[in-house]
Image 1 (cartoon, rainbow, N blue to C red):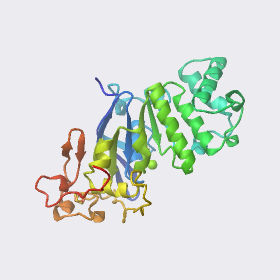
Image 2 (cartoon, helix red, strand yellow):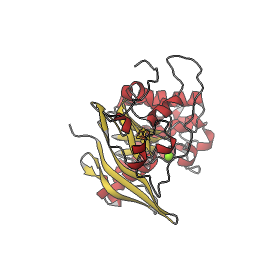
Image 3 (tube, helix red, strand yellow):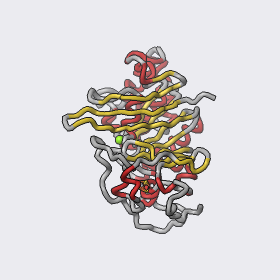
Image 4 (cartoon, rainbow, N blue to C red):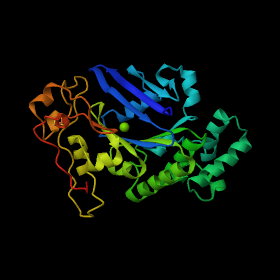
Length: 335
Ligand code: SF4
Ligand code: MG
């Protein structure tokens, strides 16, 4: 069956006074209908830029230099702005990190929920209000009718994020892209929002791309995970592959900063030392070399290709080469 989204060799740069920042350097991934995938990496790895490229929401300095992004067979990188306007908020919608800046403070929640319905679905105000109430109920907001007349500041952070989710679902999109949807929320609310997203995914069968710096966040919702570093995907695979058959040292580093739910032991979480690479002059070898405890001579000299670990699981690390002098140590997470 045709993939819902197929991104091929995407390159995006920003042209700044300091030079060309090669933020995304050849990304390929795909997504099936009804599937949820994660894109995970530290800030600056290119994960948000990838999504902004696909949605064609780059700022003036940003440019897609190469590659394609097929959504139901149509290449989004080639569509006109008018064609993109019909797709955004309708067939593909977004949930952002900070609901307060994404919601307009001067309009009621009702106005903001009705707007895409009137624009994309050609509903009249009464029809749109009815649908808006249904949407608020769907995302677990009590007293929906009353809430419709209120303004964003009258909602708590968690409730605002529920409203954002309701807005994203308004036009029954085929794909929802959520960029750090829970990062601004405290831990309990974070868990509730993730639970809601999981529930909704099962109920309405929308595809989801979840972008986050936290591997713990994707574990529950996503079946496949792409790990990004320095503008490329360094490892991708089924979530079990990523967690239990980790093949890339960077993924290993990310995992060490997630508490292990199996042991329930309060481990000391280890952030990865060092800084991400300069993408104005990207390294010619593996971008993780200066921070990698396993780095070898070849790592700084030559970018590793993707090695197929098992079906659907690939990793760009020289340690995955059959002749490598050593292998990645086990994390002891029950593999
Ligand atoms: Fe580390 Fe080398 Fe693998 Fe890069 S290619 S992650 S530097 S071992
Ligand atoms: Mg980001």
